[in-house]
Image (cartoon, rainbow, N blue to C red; front, side, top):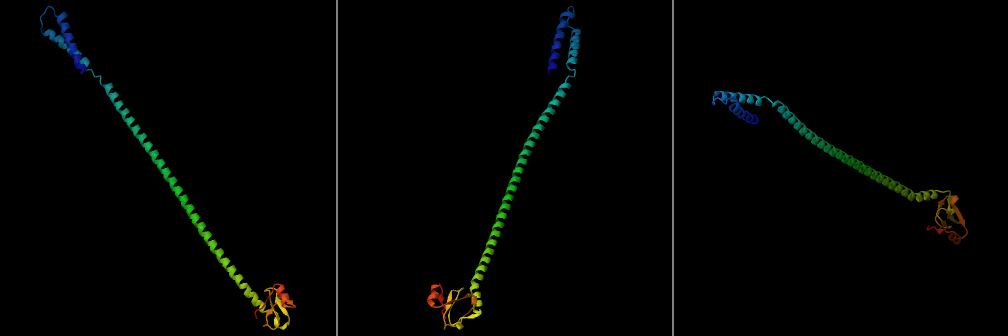
Length: 201
């Protein structure tokens, strides 16, 4: 558009120059138009000289710069999104690790409780066995005593058993006991005073 106006401007200048100085003595003729046409052609040739190539390069470079900026912004956005996803993945890993630790702790606690319960049951069983054994000891001792080497019916005296704290008098049913446990008394009062009681048979 600027070249067109320049061409018009040069054509008008050429016309007035030709009219005023070159062809004063002659009327308006074909020469004037020839000069105007020559100046116009010269102006057109000057104005239509190719000068748009650098502008084209500049636009191409600008487009490339815009594309670079756009790609850079997209890369930065992707990097930020990647960092966010990585943080979320790390948090998930920590949560999974924490859950596994809690699960292990619960399992260990259950195992400990189970072991404790088993130990308690075993202790109760052992205690019960010991109690049963203790309950059976007097019977065993009595059985052994009944199988002793001394019969109270043959002594003719008041005989006490130092183990059972029971004494027998003459006339009662015979009772066999170990002679090592035999304690002799002269009277029942003496036996009672010593902490013994009379046998029921």
